[in-house]
View 1 (cartoon, rainbow, N blue to C red):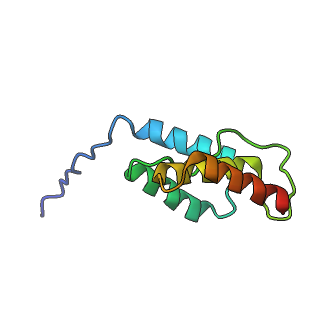
View 2 (view 1 turned 45 degrees about the horizontal axis):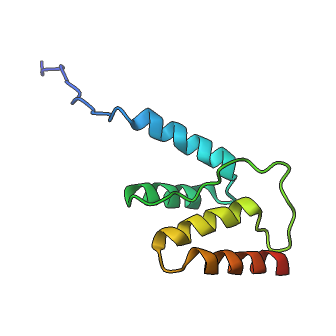
Length: 104
């Protein structure tokens, strides 16, 4: 008879893993992305590169109806992402974002 014993290799789970999942779940609930899979990929890509993930700071409820679909929370996320790239000055981008949001 063959040796039926089989040992499963030890799976190492980083101690911060539950924290990362908890933060991800909170960010997903606050952001309410239209495409969860695409947003999740962007979220974890940002974390892997040491960037700010594309997540809202809080849940916007009730959701605002705007022609562009942009809400103050989404604009804040965009501003945070662009400012981390350091291609634009904060004043220029804020003025542009305010103009874009109010003109739509």
